[in-house]
Image (cartoon, rainbow, N blue to C red):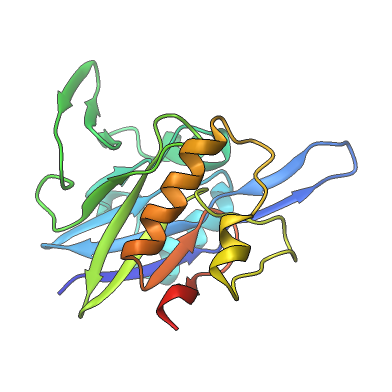
Length: 197
């Protein structure tokens, strides 16, 4: 059976310099005997600490997966110099690129195309004992303290100041809400899909 755990709850807050302090949610999925780390984030100290809490080191991770290529999601890939990096359709290993589709190779983790926030963005669908978890990094996200997940309308109307294509993002949100029981956002707490209540 697949397992899923939010190692790091993503955060995003404006700082005094007019910029952002932000690091993505980081998720550990175990599927078909493989440990998949999704979006290692930007906070190195926190990531290494959370892996240690799980009794894991960098070398225990089998797959490093990127949902999209924004720095608050990918900066910590530097901690995995000997790992191939996977995204929604390609495995990058040194100077070699291998294309794939459907599921992360060797796992039961399904890939869902969810562009809008970023053009290349994907989400991951993981079945855990009949419950459908969607790792929907930045399809949904909140500035610290602003998370609202009570209604589908709140989720659909959520403002994204960094959106690349608002029409694609709306479609991606609908797609996630159609399949998910639980949603893991890019920044904020995992929440139950209100369409399932």
